[in-house]
Image 1 (tube, rainbow, N blue to C red):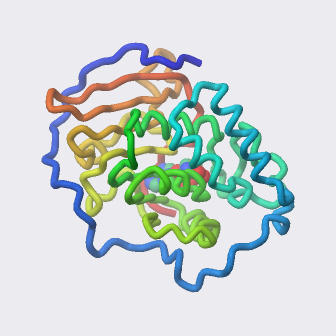
Image 2 (cartoon, rainbow, N blue to C red):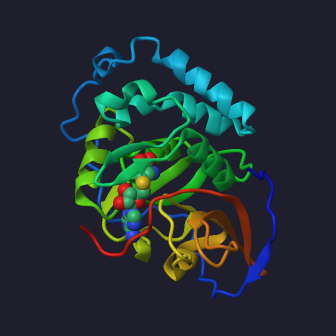
Amino acid sequence: MKERPTFPARLDFSVGKSKGNRPVPGVIHSGLSAGAKPPAGVLSHGVGLDSSAVRLNMVHKLAKQGITDPMVLSAMRSIERHRFVDSALVNQAYEDTSLPIGLGQTISKPGVVSRMAELLRNGASGRLGRVLEIGTGCGYQAAVLSLLASEVYSIERLRGLHDKARDNLRHLRLANLHLLFGDGMAGYAKGAPYAAIIAAAGGESVPQAWVDQLAMGGRLVAPVSAGVTSGGQQALVVIDKTPQGLRQTVLEAVHFVPLKSGIA
Ligand code: SAH
């Protein structure tokens, strides 16, 4: 796996005007605090009371793989990944592997979640501003992002997973995380402009709506297939919106579930 940008290229998309980093009225909240139960014991999830030790071990491995952003490492240490997977898979929760979460979808590998989070933060000293995530899935990455940004809007097109994420996240009571049900191909205009946009599903190109909703100086990280690499393989793409235009960087090969349009 390459750790460095390979062939940066300029793209000519129109650049939307930044409206500043104001709060968004009328946003649909996840209802995380409504009727929230007290946190369930770790033991009931079958990992044992020392899941923090297992997580710390995972974080050491991420650091060895090259993740250096202290805020990312700290978030990976805080969020209990085992709470986001089925009980039958709990013993694999801290391995660097993707796991099924139902409806044919998967939770991303910790290595990929932390890599993308680090790219998204791009060395920022404090938290990012507003972040848009496309593909909530089970909600794990959304929880990680909520520790790295002032506000996170996470959108999912499958009702079953949107509901599952809400259940999985309830115990964390993350007031800055907003779960949305809808087609993320259109982004979420009400929250724009975003300091950062991250996609957990890969399409053949980056939808124009995402680029339009990115703030000036913002960064988008997404898996993209076809066109960006020879052979149509999926790769991570970083797009920076600069006053001089868009700067696209194609990074290492990845394997994400497909980005689909519509809701189900
Ligand atoms: N970040 C997630 C990964 C989920 S897999 C996690 O931590 O679990 C990617 C998700 O993207 C799937 O749940 C899939 O349904 C969703 N997805 C695919 N196309 C989408 C679209 N157009 N809008 C919103 N979500 C989409």
